[in-house]
Length: 166
Image (cartoon, rainbow, N blue to C red):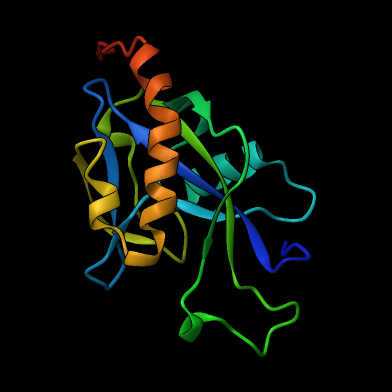
């Protein structure tokens, strides 16, 4: 869904563990890393898109996570000029994203990067909460920083509990 200004509706997902570290995914066949993210389909809510994208990109199901918070509105980023697909209609100049912070309440073994026929990631790791804005591709850095700044107080207030397995 591309709006009248050329921004595609999208969700971004920050998955955190009990230590406050965040999931950092390596894009398949590349040397770039990012958070799970993806477009919102026609007739789908942002939350529904978040759960769908979370499963498609990480293999996690709704019962594996707990939503801690989300950004209050849309955060935008523009694509570099060379990445704009001018032949598409309508032309997409960037993305507007609703960001979700979710707590992994299952075990790390629940991650399955091959849960779909078209995987997004071929590797992942836990990283410090503030590391991603410095590591993500340059044109996403500002939106990552804004999302993490808005979600940081929510994470600080959350009581992240370790779960016992077995």
